[in-house]
Image 1 (cartoon, rainbow, N blue to C red):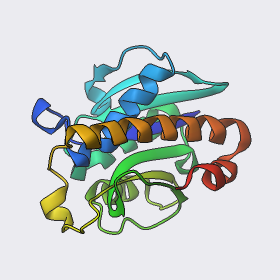
Image 2 (cartoon, one colour):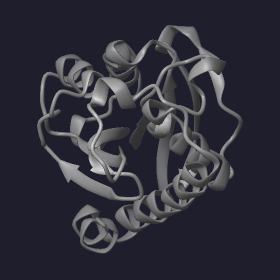
Image 3 (cartoon, rainbow, N blue to C red):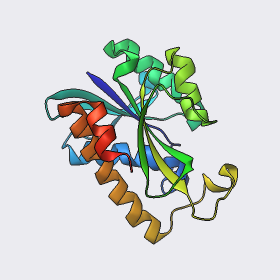
Length: 187
């Protein structure tokens, strides 16, 4: 079983912000994979659904905590489902990568991303998968000035393409392995 954790902030005011790319991507993935509707599970600090993507059993969760407390959900979910850290996939924004680019990575440090740091503390290891989705503009903007900005309509179209790209990458990872997905979908 795999845990797919879409990082972001709960609440309507954050829905279309750059910082919620991971959360929005996880929602897209659950819907495209025809999983049941995400439901709030307070014990897991998340909205979550279970099902299969291809032949792989998955739990897709959106932490209902703020970004820097995402580890609460990760910890509760890995304990409940007995999921190894190497079977955890974190979807999140990355201010060091330009919008439209994606990187699959394993056992990499957070580069200051507070949600990823929270998950690492909760799991006690860096040995988990991350799918990092760029949010940076062509002319670099400091992360603190960027993460809570709303996506423009053109940027929303780019984000939807990224969500499709990530969903295809995850399906490839589940059938052919993450290394194959990395070689095909890191762009």
